[in-house]
Length: 186
Image 1 (cartoon, rainbow, N blue to C red):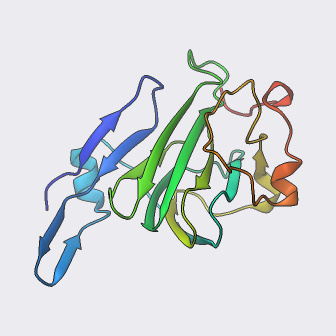
Image 2: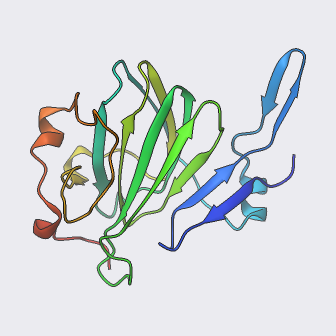
């Protein structure tokens, strides 16, 4: 298959990717990741782990998370069932868009994937019940390197949907605000 469609943003780094999907009477086939096709689109990463989450309730928020170096992760996120508002916040101190974010809707229907590079905090809110999110990461999970910022900090200004945060882990509820972040990313 050919390279996927790619959309870039004013916040440099995150990329919205739409893989080709071939449909017929049986259903569809899609090459959701090909190192060669992604490289043709200017994306050359090595992924080492796949993660899969299920959120039973709409309004579930997961994030905003990141891992510090040397376990910083690039993430390639997609939804296989349901819909999410997916968000990447620039936490690179020297970036002209430090503190700004990109938000996109990912769904099983629109078939978009969101590439979130190292130096961004990531989170999402489910827009439908029983939403499944799959994502590839470029570094292994390390609990001691995992950090985050509060998902609804007004300083970041994310326009979360109505009902966001209806389900939230105790850990995510207690993450620090953006002003208290000591970012490890230059």
